[in-house]
Length: 320
Image (cartoon, rainbow, N blue to C red; front, top):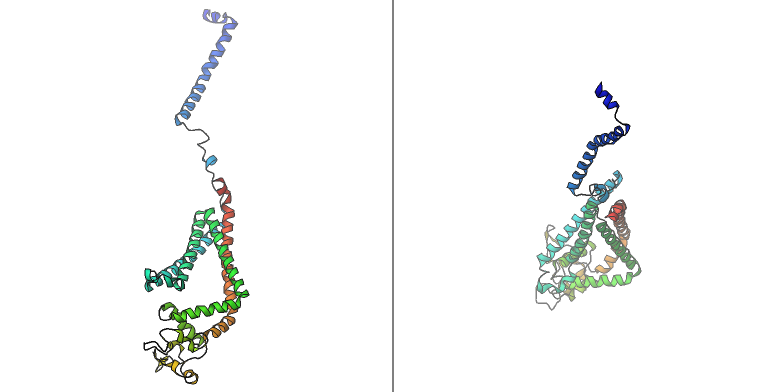
């Protein structure tokens, strides 16, 4: 009872001074926990903003099913043309190496070698297709833009070539005649040209440029030549190039240039290949135009797919 009276007898001011102390005692665990949290945060030495990867490395937008299909289709499209380009490049390089056209003594006729067309065409197609493949696979805006620009340049060259063919038919005929004359002069020196000339003469049933007498300009078939082929024409000019109907007769046109036109007409074709080739090209004009249109449509499809992928990845590329 005495103790209780003593407590009751304490002044009001002292009891009020005890309340803040009690509140501080109650708040101590919370303040100590805050200090521990701050100390742990200080030990990491990393700002809070850097711990959020979404601020600095945003996730790219999820592509739709259609966009993914376009991406895979573009990759396969470019992969197909890449393989075709590498095949053409390999054939061209193999042809040049097999004939020794890359040797130092044969660099002069390299510009007229047909295999050079395979090399240049295969190199261009494989380079552009490789850029398209990598651009579709890595979603690279730079490679896709290069692919689009290169394909558009090819389309422009094709359209320009078609317009030149339509507007300069006479000059094109003269250029074709000059090319055939070059093939005639180098018939024995270039295996590819010899194969091309033989196929044209067999399929079109013609001989020479304007007539079979044009083969006199060839140094091997000229009548003043010392070889066994003097005053002759290639066996591909013969009306019947087979011996006994089964064995090719390479000597079927020997001495034809010594004969008159009537006698020579029973052995070889008298008409030239320039007129026959021009008539064949006019007859195949529809097919050539259809093939050119299909090629342009295929190239346009590749450009459209590349543009669709560019539109899908441009926001990510801008942030980078």
